Amino acid sequence: MNIIKTKINGVLLVKNNTFYDIRGKLIQALNSKFLKESNLRMKPNLTLITHSLQNTIRGMHNQYKNPQDKLVTVIDGKIQDVVIDLKKSSSTFASYESFEINEKTGYSLYIPHWCAHGFLTKTKKSIICYNINNEYDPESQQTIKWNDDIIDIKWKINEKSKAILSKKDQLGINFSQSHFFK
Image 1 (cartoon, one colour):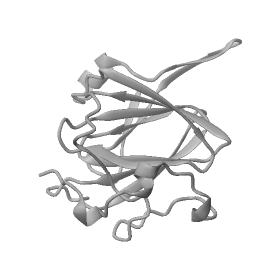
Image 2 (image 1 turned 120 degrees about the horizontal axis):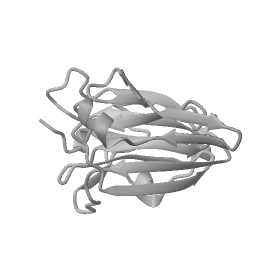
Image 3 (image 1 turned 90 degrees about the vertical axis):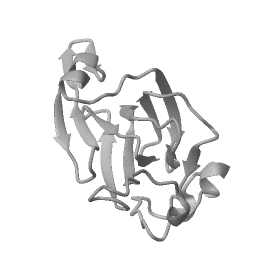
């Protein structure tokens, strides 16, 4: 496993160990020893798996109480994964970064708790696995508008009107209304 730093402070691309043989492949997407050696204090205690259709946007989500670090891995398909830095003391505060993650590249994305996270599915279906270090807390979860004017995410979708969104994601708050981290 290798770690690649990204533009956003604390967000890391993790190159997973992948092993191939005549049966297919095995991907080591989580290794607690590696996390510890890399000074990532994440101890996952929750795993979520989403199945999403093409042009689905999930996000931009985070929790401001009981915050969650995430390790996101694409099991099948391809996504545009996006993070927004919500940490006021960060040099990358209020900026976003976008990543293409798919099952072929062998990368996972580590997202620290001070970032909002979301993704757009780019294939007919995508299966995404989240390893998370804290329980879901609906009282402190916030959803920032996927198309907020301040952040202005460049979603790689032909027509925004074709985006599939949950009601919660459609009703997200403006970035300026967000809870931020120190």
